[in-house]
Length: 143
Image (tube, rainbow, N blue to C red; front, side, top):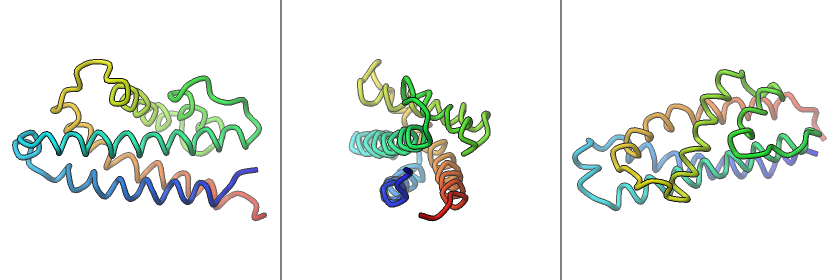
């Protein structure tokens, strides 16, 4: 059974991280890059928000009767199967899983400029994701 309270709590936490991302994304590039604390904050906000989105995805997929996604990327793609969002949007959102993995596992030297460039994308996409999750929850039977 889909736990609305769990999802709502995760969404609230994502919104808190989003507020931090918005502040950082509004800094001029030079100011952002001058202070390594900005990048550390941006990475952490992105990691937490994307991780929470993945948690929501896994919960929605498994509690809707599907097998668990094979990876984080697929957790976004399967939201299209559930009718949470369009296939095009799920593919776009799935790229967040790759960003999260690079941040968490430091696959390459993480380029501060790329993190800075990822912020406005996240600031645009996360509210869209949250809106789709909210609409999906509203369509579920109460109980």
